[in-house]
Image (cartoon, rainbow, N blue to C red; front, top):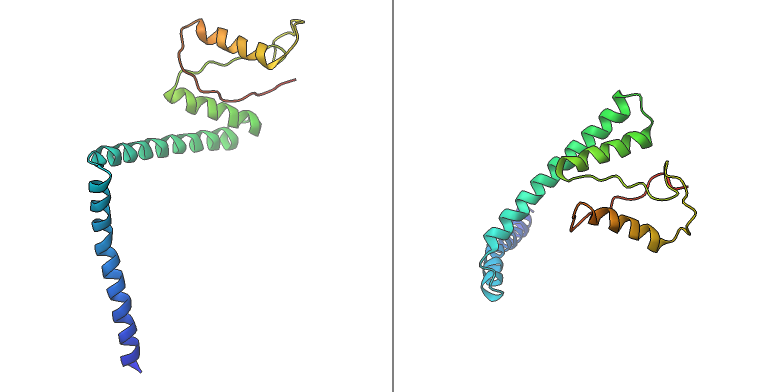
Length: 141
């Protein structure tokens, strides 16, 4: 009875050993076939980005926890504030208040997507910002 199980364990162990040996062989074939000679740079950058992303996620989670549990602020406001604080840690933040949103008075011109987008482009062109990330709209009326 033990002899039959031992044979199965030997087969499974052989397959696992072949798999562990096969991974570096497959990676070597891929590097040579697709000329991935800068793979060390790709791996290094991937690890660096993963670490930075993890740190930012941890800071964001900590800020949300602090804002919602410790400070007497309502949850949506606390999450928005924590998001703004986390974004400000790595980027220049420009809060845009568009026509008919927030405290900005309605100017009487037709509110179209083209007009609102034109306002944002004009705002970004003023300080000479070439690229921007859009974070969303809060408090639209």
